[in-house]
Length: 491
Image (cartoon, rainbow, N blue to C red; front, side, top):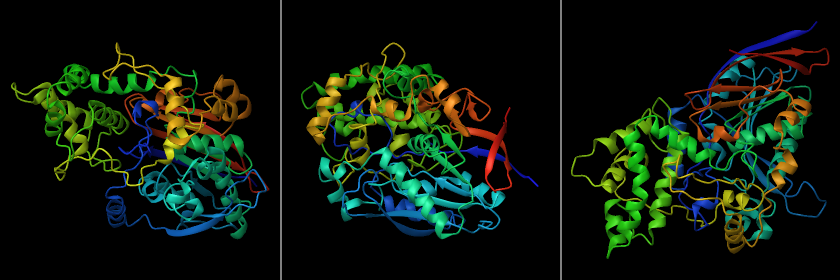
């Protein structure tokens, strides 16, 4: 007799990305803004969440992983870290599901402690939770250390999405075998880059997982699939909807920064105004620092206080604009900008001075990915955007990647490997059981799937939200124990 599993999933999912001001490339505008987690205070933050969220208990384990899944060369293996929680698992005999979070471009503990949704629903589903870490991030380092793994283009060559997806597939297959749980269904979860991986894995390995929940997953932010100015237009509108005067102040500030920097001792004065720990080398450093903060604020403009990327109040953009607009009448435009940006960089008031480069390793894994296959064109339209106007220049992008890594990007590879052009036909014809969740205030939503494409390719969109969704999914279990159909019910 067929049995049914029904679950109301109420999901407020953080955009799972990591901030970082440390970049190996001289211009952050050449790379997409998946913020990477800063190394400063990393352990302190993780320990904080371990203390605050005692319900998020997990074992830390390691899995011996192939360095190259697509050749039979005698290459050294590496230890892939994963976190696992079986507190609520029904077990293999009861066909308890396995929820697998697709690790992003950073430390897996940070993602696990900020993914409350799957922890909340695990008891209802009787699910086993596993968080495999993405290769070349956190403690999952080939060649024994980060320094060796990031040494050059040869050692970094195995840092690809294809290898990462194969890692997840091999890992979960081995895990199920060891648990005698081959018949247990697997559901994939992920946000931002992890959401992209979840959607792509469902397409590439449909026999491994029965479905995927891809939150804020910009799988269309490649080539010319979406307009390159989409991200910055959405981020700008997030500020404009709070305050047009705030929007205009930020828009005018870029010229004010350049003008101040051209004065005698101008860089020194800008350093003092913005409380940097060392003297600025150029106005570009300051502009990139501000640009990054505004972008991140647009990603995490939650209506409640949060401490995912930075300790922030509820509605942080509203608070930034309140500071900018509320500065005294004698405050200069740059004083106003400093007052506003301090909400992001120093809301707690504990920072005495700001560091522009807080990556002690000097190389960043996402920069490598962006310089190889994850080429996501972005530009800023001066008419609609509060950011400085600039166009995506592939020649400059390519040159910078060559100077940094001695590699040439492959801008068409992702759409060749995973699709993107005419995505509606692709997903409708060949995909199933993928939920794309987006809040339209999130600037990454512009590169995601925003409409239903079939009964089982579902888009859940919140107009004034950041990846907030409700989903009722009914699975039917056949006699052989596999979930074979899903009927979404949404409103």
